[in-house]
Image (cartoon, rainbow, N blue to C red; front, top):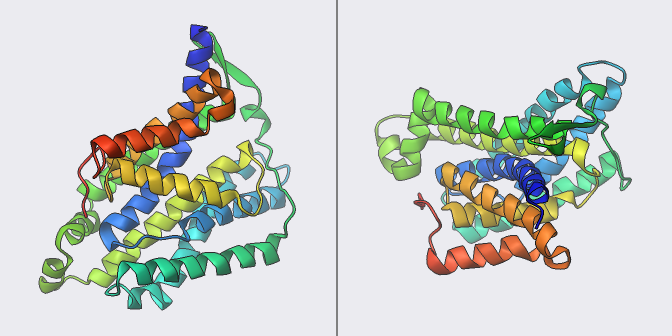
Length: 292
């Protein structure tokens, strides 16, 4: 097998893995701190892509339109998520997980209908700015320039999440609440506010993932379905609520699919799922420690 072709596929797989990580990290954060399996996380990813397209279209011709879109979309999805969390979801934290799944599933249906009303069923596409078009050579392998943005975004988000969790007061409280929320509440800390911040961050990451993927794919209704399934699988094989587990799972998922295209294109989609099954057979609770 051509080694350059393998390297090229690995680089493409790593780019895809960074998108998966950013979205899965948001899902894992909400799972770890709030213990809420947020089924409408994928809808926020889709909304992020549509908002990014809308902002970029409104700023057509402006040299910074993509960067403004990448900033605006996560803020919009965080606002949507916080509106749901503050008005309804915060009243259900003590309910069983089945109730939370049904509630977030209902929100997903509503959001998807609102997206259909707002943007319609038509495909959209976001063309990256001229400086990010074309390809660059890395070790003799041609890689789309925009993929460099994706490869840089993943480590930046991972570093930002680490700083938030270990170097900020509210991040440390969130980690404590993930372990023992009752004890944190007994200490007089407003756990509800901590939950709102964590949920807002999770929704922001979903929107950021959608905005980042917008220049690489068609923006349309239903683009969230596959990604939501993949994100849940990544969180499960990485360890429920473990952000670093989400990173490891994303790398496995992204690279496996990309290399699978090279080895056996007809069944490439099955490669990451086969790895998921193998991981769960060996380590049923995930590769890294679960916080559940």
